[in-house]
Length: 179
Image (cartoon, rainbow, N blue to C red):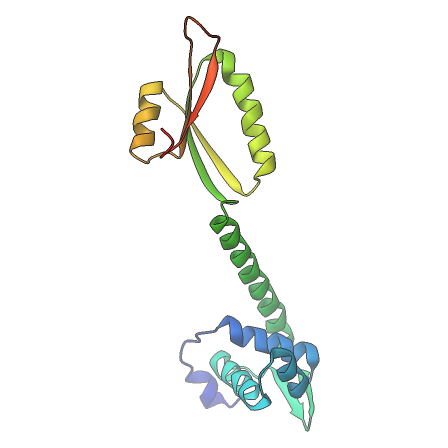
């Protein structure tokens, strides 16, 4: 890259596709094989790498005929590109877990007597073991407040306990739409 090109750079708008193409070319050390692995033709791949080099203002590869090698800048950027792609994969996996209800925040208001606290703690611990990607946000409150927060959608569920004359203590689980 000449000095004029480096000094007149527009802000780079990198895409995951550009980074993926760069990583694949770096791993294959050959444009044609990289293009085949990416299921695209070679000219668009070459153009993407040239665009990436222009956007970054550095040369990523030295080219000698059909042979290519990473430059020093290419080696450094390769490590960051791989880390960025791995982070993007983790982000997609987290989004999938959230769509499937396996991640997120579960807000629970608890209004129960001391006699049920140990059982509730055990149930929460089991929930956390079974659903490690869900944050369990628990708030101690009164029964009346818990029911009101549930109706208003401020919490996802409430756990209440009541003692009746005919039965021993029990836990009633209620969430929006279930009563």
